[in-house]
Length: 100
Image (cartoon, rainbow, N blue to C red; front, side, top):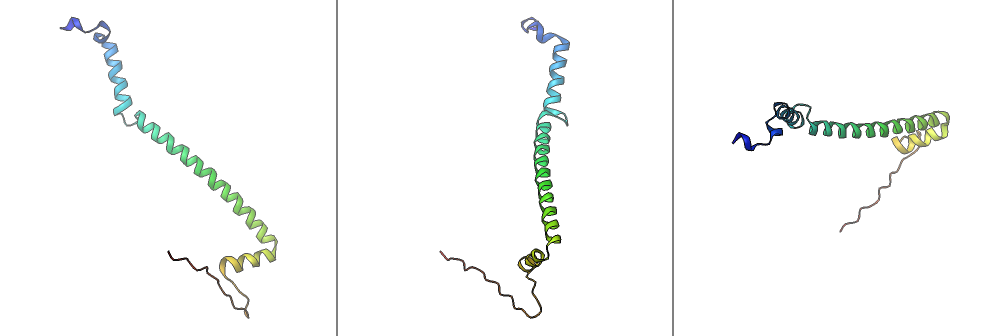
């Protein structure tokens, strides 16, 4: 019965290598699937990092523009934070939602 197995599969080093590779690919804590998932997560996080860096640049540009122009600062405060002058009334117009 032992003779029917090809000589390659009876080789100790071959069997040990196959078992080692199987262990490293499927059972180890740093297996192939985990490495792939971590690589994908890293890629997603790098994309998020780039998005936030772009947003930071945009906000810094807007801030610099607001701090240099008082009329624009007043407009921003009125629209965003609903600020008003002491003798003014502010009316907020909300569009009516259509009912189906």
